[in-house]
Length: 158
Image (cartoon, rainbow, N blue to C red; front, side):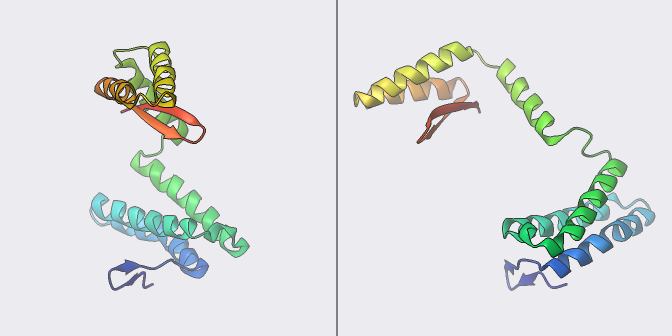
């Protein structure tokens, strides 16, 4: 299956995705049977997931014909992950735990952060950009990154 055109990766078709899905576990087993070649096995898994991501990014999941291959890939990746000890925690749970760890390392509390965000918004409204920048820089020095959006300002731990 040719996925590269020059230096550009092409988007796989549903048929190519189905071919990858069908070959994933046999290729993985073959690598593991080759003197427990985990580097090759991880490469096979990575290559397949990269192909899947390109397929999904281009809206391939909307094609009803791709659903069996997508289901097979999900099950195969889960099984392979189990063999390798991966995916033991749901992604959302892992990310939440990681954010909680970062939050515990903060030197300022959430109430102070929210108060400073409010003060910064008022300073921006009053066109006091020096104070607005000062607040942003202070928070950044304390590992708080502000994210400005049309709906308002949120923050995350850097």
